[in-house]
Image (tube, rainbow, N blue to C red; front, top):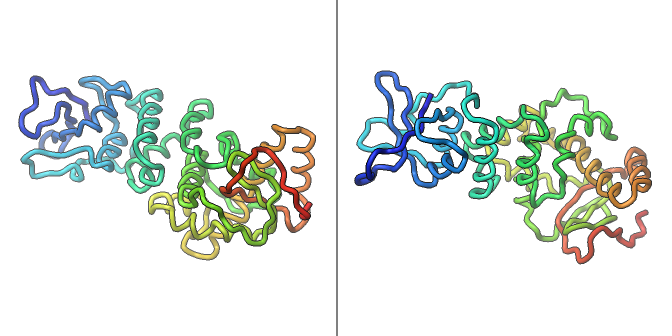
Length: 308
């Protein structure tokens, strides 16, 4: 297991104040840690001599925060196990590290690097109460509440769209996908075909229409997915992401999440109206909703429209 170590005395030349030692095939390997890297570990509660999980090591490696001095090896040569676990760090340490990473990097950047992407996916097995703070940060700048993603299995089981595939999502994976997609959409006006605006809230416009609405966001989302995220979504959704078949992810899977998010928003205003909306989304051909950014002056108001 790698260990986190403080240098005794003042660093010389390009030496770092903190370094990590890992096992090697013939001898231990020493890796210098950039200030951004050791501050990340220190702020997460690690101290001199503490073990550093391999997944954290790979996260630092992915971020380019490790280097060597006059050595024949590089950080990429470290004997990182094929199966990574997070047994050495407490949950509070992992949570603090996740918060710092989300403050210092975009979610898209964190999904581009294999190490950081694996680190965030490691939260998939944690309890909802524990990961809620992480989901809140990831889902910032999206129209989604963390609870909707936490209850994704219930959402899919009770939603109006039959999902026959044995999907294997997690709240973390879905949240990462949504944040990357919405970051790519930006905050400008999005033209939604085959849909009509029906509600507006907090800078978002809700459109109702048929399943063709999702072509307004389909390409933008897919093109924004970094390779590690795209591969994980393909595996979890059981759909080949580079083919037209992946549109089912939007018209069924993502559509279910949109439905439940909209229902919860309406229920917060009027619980009875929420029931009416939920029943209505289960009927008819134009029963899909999508939420896109828009220039909205007033929150929580329906549009005056001939659609309803």
